[in-house]
Length: 127
Image 1 (cartoon, rainbow, N blue to C red):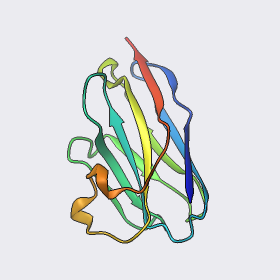
Image 2: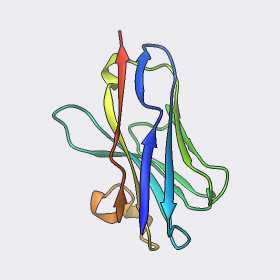
Image 3: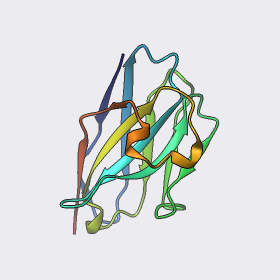
Image 4: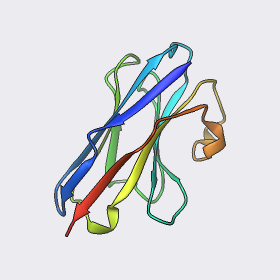
């Protein structure tokens, strides 16, 4: 089993930076990839970026390419999400998720492709 805990969310200033952490625990040795998702108020959950468990492969959603960075040092470390120049409309709830088995990368943005989800962490960007 895998447990995920997102952290480092909270209040940020417009123009400032965001850095989130997702820590995985449990039987993660067979996991394949970890993704970050976001959900704005009244909106659906959408993928932001996905990174392979080893950290060697990354895929970003078209809507965020060039705007943020996902990283992890190795398979045992937490995964991070970094974004600069925050805007007020980027007040959203962020979730991390884990895909346990290998999958078609084409499906990286599908909510159903992930086996475990964190509880979410709120990021509020003040104007």
